[in-house]
Amino acid sequence: MSAASGSDAAEAAGADATNIPDDHPRAASLRTRERMKAAVTAGLVHGTGLIAHGRGEAFDYLLGEQTPPESRAAIAEGAALLRQARQPVLSLNGNVVALAARACVEVAHALPSLRLEVNLFHRTEERVRRLVAAMEEAGARPGEVLGPDPDHRIPGLSSDRARCHRAGIGEADVVLVPLEDGDRCQALKAMGKTVVTVDLNPLSRTARAADVTIVDELTRVLPLLAQALREGSPRPPGFDNGQNLQAVRRRMAQNLLQDLQ
Ligand code: PTJ
Image (cartoon, rainbow, N blue to C red; front, top):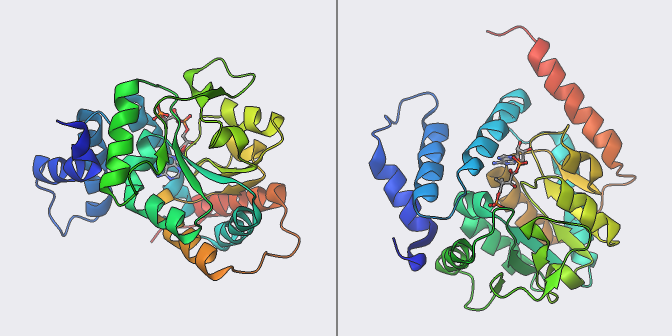
């Protein structure tokens, strides 16, 4: 499959791969799984991205598969920080592009100062090129997505994720890093940056280290975030990330304990 085929091709391959009946109670979730599998075949998602996706699904069960009020508050806070930023950046990995390329473009176009940058843990130049092509196929302007030919490093990170662009993550003051793998969040914080993350796991190192953690499913978050960026929603008074995370954990625990119908 050519690099230019991108996530639409992954979607098409996924849709063809299995016949999931519309009336299956988990049809939407099963289709997303097929899309992720196809995105691995298309060279967009790393194999371990499927494991990350499964972990996300498990936490989404605990959340009740809907956006809770705590996440709405975190989205409003994150949007306010991004709007105030001198140089905001949305960091893209394989899972993020496969799940939500168009929604990421929508977020970028809702805040024209925001830069898009592909930054990978399991970096290969081929996968970076494919992900940039998938973003362009989803509506990003040619050259809008940084990623190939990085000219900067995040200090204190030994993984390939350190390789980034000075004009993107390097000089960013606020970085939105969805589906993050932990150590980079701490490295970005050590550089003095403000980190906003989207992570269904409220216990993860990223969730606890970020300035704003949106505990919710990425494809539910991005349209709400784009709307908040466009409308300039007010900042929630006294937002505290630690308290917000605790409230989400409590909500998950209550969901686990409640009697099922
Ligand atoms: O494309 P690469 O090479 O940069 O690799 C990307 C992955 C995702 C493989 C890498 O960053 C990784 O291994 O991440 P982790 O450590 O598994 O963390 C991903 C986090 O995202 C986990 O805490 C999941 O619960 C969460 N997550 C998974 N899917 C979603 C999600 N959060 C929100 N929405 C989702 N759809």
